[in-house]
Length: 128
Image (cartoon, one colour):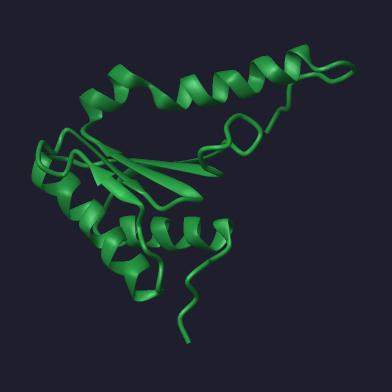
């Protein structure tokens, strides 16, 4: 029986596996549960061309649908510079390296995490 509501962590693993199947580059996962109510995780990956970006997102879409997950929406599949797939608990961003460097989502979201840790009473920054 298919699961219409996968756990966020399982959905992240499924998305990463689907990205790896089609040779995504520089896959990063950011836990944003403490930063926003919009989603739990962001998965960010790079594609080598507009066509590759589209095929990466298409593969994630196919794999999550096989598990009974219904995407809430997608953006940017036509341009291929930056495509987004909204799966509710996770949002998958696939970009060309130039767009990824320009928008720098990792620094934007991880910077918020570091800033919050520094300003939390009695807590210092987390070191991985």
